[in-house]
Image (tube, rainbow, N blue to C red; front, top):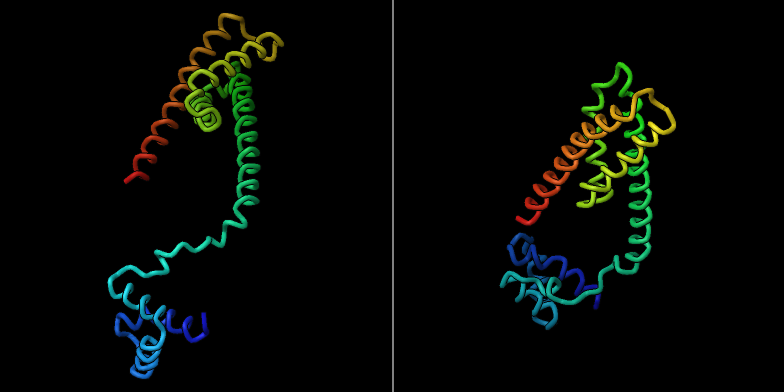
Amino acid sequence: MRTECSVVRDLLPLYVEDMVNPETAQFVSDHLKECSECHSEFESLKNGVPLSMVENKPAAETANSKPFKKMMKRMNRQFYSIAYAAIIFLIFLGFGWTAGNNLMYNSLIMPIVGIFGYYVFKWKAFYKVLVLLLLIDLSVFAFQLVEIGFVDTLMWTMLYAIFVLVGVAIAFLLYYAFRKEEKK
C-alpha cells in the first residue's frame, strides 16, 4: 500500500461525511478515480460497512496472547491461594473468638468465609466450605485451642455453617445477577 493510499484511507470517513476542506476533498476524489482499492473502501463506507472491518486482518495481540494467558493463569492461581488461606484464617479467627468477647463478629466473618468459598470452589462451596469448617472446628477442639466442650463445638459449628451458607448464597446470587446483566 502506498503512502498516498494510507493517507486517503485515513481521510475517507471524514470525506464520506463531507467534513474535509475543499482542497482535501479534491485530493481524495482525484485519488479515488485512480485507485480501485481505495474506491472500493469508499463505496463500502458509503454503504455503512468499512472493508477494514470485513477483511480478515491478523490481530496484533495474537503474538502476545500466550504469555498474557500464562501470566493471567499464574495470577489467578495466586489469588485462589490467597483466598483459600483467607478462608482458613477467618475460620480459625472466628472460632477463636467464640469463647471471647468478640463472638458477635462471627456473624460478619462467616458469611465472608462463604463468599470466599464460592469464589474458590464455585458451586461446590455448598459442601466443601462446610467440610472445611467442620474439620477446622474439630481440630480446634482436639488441640484444645478454645476451652469449650465437644457438644458446644458442634453447636457453634452448625450455627457458623448457617452463616457460611448465607455467604455462599449471597455470592451465588450476585454472580447470577451480574451474569444475567452481561447477557443483555
